[in-house]
Length: 332
Picture 1 (cartoon, rainbow, N blue to C red):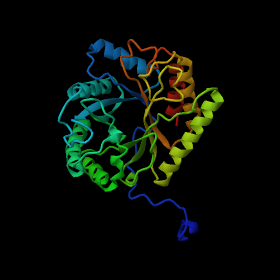
Picture 2: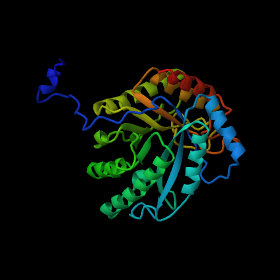
Picture 3: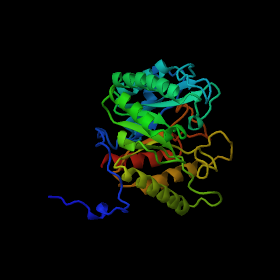
Picture 4: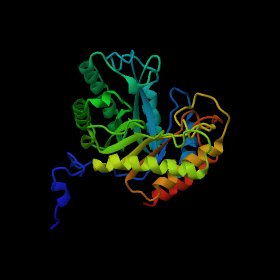
């Protein structure tokens, strides 16, 4: 017989709330890989095969394809009213990755015609927005089921809209009626907690956390930065009895990578070594941690011709870090 923790019976205890339901397990836990954002680029079949082979050579076993949704502006409720990149092409890319032996998943990213960030969306008619978003995401879940996705992301970085936990619980329930794989909800690095983790199967995070404010970026400082971030992520995930899913992590190959990991558009001097050392700090912080079920490394752009300042890791010092991290985690 297992006795209850008597401390949790005390009325003013700080014990975590019980999860509303047991999470659906990941059949392919610790199969890490890349988020491949090619958008609408026309990539010949032979070139795609080489890209996938390069990914697999690093030990990657999973491929995530972003799918762009569009609404008119941050205050509108017309989710799906516009198209910025081809959904059909994204699905074809996911199928191609699956055919090359990679597990696949889809990453829904909602934006506007002017590329507003979804974290600041405040629809004037919130009920209409949730109804439209539910229709859009449920249709995408059907597509994910048809391509054999091993996971599905229900929402990505809706910082302000995540305040409406009951509405998100209904969205998650609607998606669960269409697909049986684990469902992930992803928060932005700056705002980790939400009120609906018991309805999801994993605590997803876009892990673009600053590791240093500015100044020196010695490896010891980067390591300390990622250990502190790891502790905060684990605190939230464990409070809700959910595994951690790093839905996105990436660093530009520039001198500001440790202070502004999300910023790939503001030019600064190239520093591919710093990119590698930021990934190394992540690897060290999470080494041996089985709570982390997936790591998706952002690999935007065409890996055949990587941007020397961009997020790509191929042909840069970070590629060796990927090989070590993927290889270590594959043995869990």
